[in-house]
Length: 301
Image (tube, rainbow, N blue to C red; front, side, top):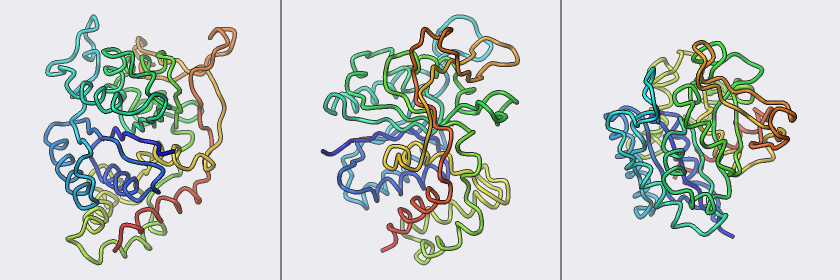
């Protein structure tokens, strides 16, 4: 059975690598759509590059859309009105893409904030029946956050959206910082990828150039290693044996002044005994880096 996937990404070298890897997947997995969320100019560039990749792989019919431009709730604002410019159009495209897939078939792999998916589930609850699962990179439980000491960036960007998704009775797999901290592009991992850059004008060449530039300190890199967490939702969907974890009830702190965006595993007696997520605690980092590297190298013709 062919399993459709939808990628929900934020612009950057990691997203480009994730898309290129997705385009090399075996035929039993097919790309059914993708969204980019973030700053409008960056989203526009990422969408143009994504369409070029899809065209060159014979997938021009796959929809590429802009996601929600901001969080469900304005920062420091009252009430639950949408942020300025957040008209839900990205969510409408996502609803359409999910509805086009059979019931219990499509997986949404989210590498950024969950704003678009949360809006889609609120606006069209019926799409939950089409979801085989949601895999999202986010949260931090036993390690410090990367935006505050207790909050991970994707959850902290829109805690209300994360809370909505976790509360919608859809199968959720959470890939937290605990699992992805060592999953990085270092010099050893990058060296074999030099083959991608032999033709700088090719899709693979452009992705390689983006990875090199980001790793050297631009596009969010730290000058040494580049986080590859954006690819983990895709890898968890197509290669689950790389990961291990447990079912739990996860709550998101939405109100605390110092704890907003914090993810908390609740004890069964406090959560009604009902888990709402599979929390992946560990990954085989070397094996996962090998899988991602091989998928990227498969794009070299």
